[in-house]
Image (cartoon, helix red, strand yellow):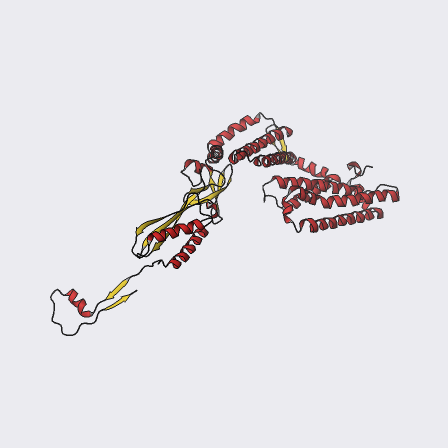
Length: 451
């Protein structure tokens, strides 16, 4: 049974059907079917997605959820259409059109879900996806009822002439649409290929990133080359465009081109890898992402710095995990002059060995570094295998353990002390006068204040 064909569904036919009682009944039945489909979608949401919001990030479950409303409504509309034909013996008008609208509503939802999957996360949120799907659906409705002829004729009438060619608004929109569709398909294929390549654990991570970036760039170029002939653009004009692009790269885009070339150099020579600890311009952080234009350097405080690739190539970069990510750090501490230094040094090593983050293979060391004013300076040095977890918590644990052990062993941790002496008036005068004078009164007793 042919449920829908465009030639039999014009604006006049639809409007005429809605002027009859049967047409209004069909419209009411159709809206009841859509309402029933909406209830089915709400039921599926409550039982499958409300308690598991992470399923929205998975493409296939999210796509199936997006199809629940149009598919369930479509089934109800088709059943209602069949019942309508069997009861009245004649085909309906409004129900078949609603069936076609629901079918294309589902197809448009599939398309927008694919676009959301292709684009980077956060670029197309669910609300924006719903707006895009609704806009495309209204576009289909205008085509289905024949309103598109008026719109297309108006778009074609708005244009201008460039040389011997005439460009209209319709041509530009069509070109943009075709290029967008082909580019979305190219990005989708490249994303699927990227997911497969990144799962190859036997291949170096930097090499996998290079392969995925080259694959994406190649597919985008191929997509443009396929889209241009579809639009009737002669590819020979690309030679002129290539020359203009070369001049632009030589002047205005030199810095951008340098960053892209530097990005591929970094990935190919593997001098910087994801997870490395770098010091760039007195900023220390870990490489969380390498792109074609910049490297994301994430600090221990959570802030992220975008470092251009040419900066990492042209300047000296301190890679603290180039060959081995383990790092040496130390904890300074001071003890009194009456302390048994051999015992104190042994306690420092015991405390370090007891901590799980201190490497046992390289072994910690304790040293006497200086004889200071208030005490003897000691230093506990050790290797840390996981510097990406930070040092503040580790040093705090060590200081607390040292404090407890020193209290148990009676080892003093000194603090600065100063002594101030106050002299009597006579003594001050005698210190100022070189000729001693006969004492006329008893001297003020000397006092001493210690702080």
